[in-house]
Image 1 (tube, helix red, strand yellow):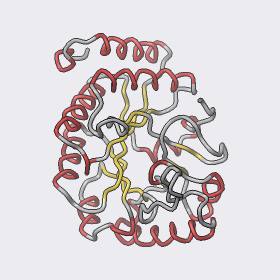
Image 2 (cartoon, rainbow, N blue to C red):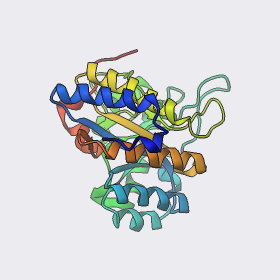
Image 3 (tube, rainbow, N blue to C red):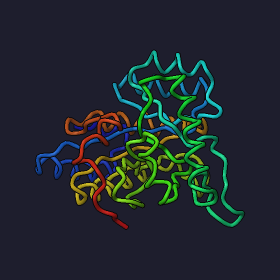
Image 4 (tube, rainbow, N blue to C red):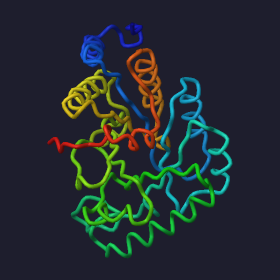
Length: 266
């Protein structure tokens, strides 16, 4: 059972327990993975995130910006088995118009140019990480053009990790994140604990309707303040305390055909 003391014994913890009980009664464990974005170098924040994961034995998909990735990041990650490096676009530069949502892998350039840039990033990342490099593409701002998405297999990617339940192309494997601990629209710090739990429960319900699909937790270590770290630590403790939660590597989940995203939920 959960130590409700860390959540001030709110009803939101009960909602989560009830949802997890439904999964258990259906004979399913909850596949969960953790993804963190925008890494480029070894920082105190990255080391703190690594320590949080290692202490709880939680795999981490670390989305790295290839153009700015520092060489020493290779040795750091290669010495920590729980971290899987992934390609996070190429330079994380916005190519969208002034009144459009930010996007690097959108339709603002030719597909040929976008894929060529990604291949340049792949070469740099392979030099740093070798076979440890994930085959999953993580688009900056979680946005990618449908035509680009349809072509990524031609340059060696097995799938895409974005955000939410909508997918652009059902012929591409998706292993999306769903719960972001940060409130980007309001104050760019952590959401209230209760709000994170409510968000988690809602997404677990959607996952259950979607063939018991995996749930992804999204973080951004470089912008975490004290509140973000506190919320993240409590969330990881909460999930790790449950026997039917199964922390997994994103690449293992996307390799399982039963963990594709077959339905485009609104």
